[in-house]
Amino acid sequence: MNKPILLSTPHIGERELELVKEAFASNWIAPVGPHIDAFEQEFCQVTSASYAVAVTSGTAALHLALRLVGVEAGDEVFCSTLTFIASANPIIYLGAKPVFIDSDRTSWNMNPELLAEALQHRAKKGKLPKAVVLVHLYGQSADIDPILQTCNYYDIPLIEDAAEALGATYKERSLGTFGRIGIYSFNGNKIITTSGGGMLVSDDLELVEKARFLATQARDRVVHYQHSEIGYNYRLSNILAGIGRGQLSVLNQRVAARRRNFENYYQVLKNLPGVEFMPEANYGYATRWLTCITVEPEAFGANREQLRLALFEQQIESRPVWKPLHIQPIFAECECFGGAVAEDLFARGLCLPSGSNLTDEDLDIVITEIQAVHQKHQQIIRESELIIDKTFCISNK
Ligand SMILES: *Cc1c(COP(=O)(O)O)cnc(C)c1O
Image (tube, rainbow, N blue to C red; front, side):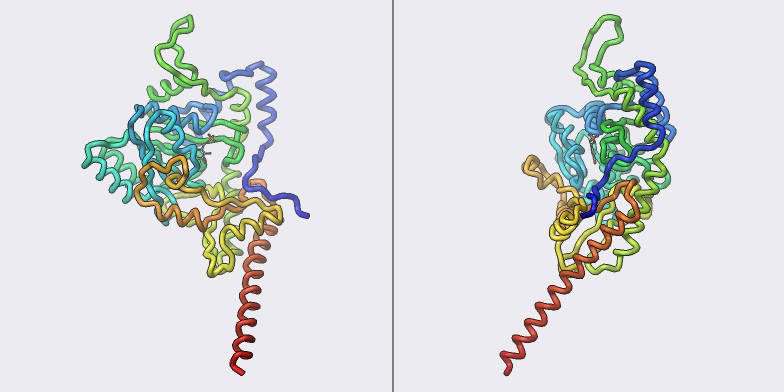
């Protein structure tokens, strides 16, 4: 039996342990310390963001972001529907209501025209949303220009959820640096990891300082403990920031490895009937955080779920594309503009093993199994046609 081939696992470089040891040696075992400051600075260098705050998770970063742009109970926030639930949960934490927007086919991300329609609709009703959360799915950029233009027209802050898209660009600029605020995740399965962690970036220094303040229990600048606002305990540990610094220094290699995975899958499987790959929109450079395919059951011979189960039997982990948020039970009452594209991508979409630490041999095993599933079903179809032919001959006698 093969060893399991997993979807996306941590890939630690050579510097991380040294940096963690430094934290221990200097006794900065706390949510403050030199690694945190350095991690934030280095993150700004890598992304060309102006200011950054390291926090405990991408979800925490998004929670802070929404609060910083003034989202309050009863407000609406527009959000991509094809994404992980963490993109919308912080909207609920603040007592606000998510309204979902469907994807386009070129990027699988928020459809700019639908967003414009939705905002026009709300403008007519005289109740605009307080923010737009734009997700860059699987490391691919949404079409930011028209989206930003629409948001600017209505004066609505754009928040970029770049949790899956560190290292990706739109027109040669880093994702997460276009909106009022950008957020990233360093969860264990992301392109780089601190085991758990996140980052919030913005060009607005005041906003970033406020984020830092809220993330440390909103402590007033006086000697005693005094609080005039409710904050959170969201700062990243200095130990984890050490891991983050090491990971950041190999980011480009990690992106290259994930793109190479995609290329390997693509070159062999692109001619397989019924298999299509998530496109790379021409305005961006995707990280291919996960390689995603869609499966057309008629042509391929098996549906997405049959393929997933066949891979699973060979100890290969693959996952359906995110179930759209507008069809999640918990969001059943929420409004969605469009939805059919995301639903179709969910029904047919499968994410293949994509870690930057996969070997060529691992990829070969996955590719061979996908080909085998197709061939097996072709065989079944041929055999059943033979049976039909035979019965046809017999009944014709
Ligand atoms: C992972 C992820 C998040 C949340 O990040 P955490 O660090 O796990 O809290 C948010 N949005 C998207 C699209 C993600 O993939």
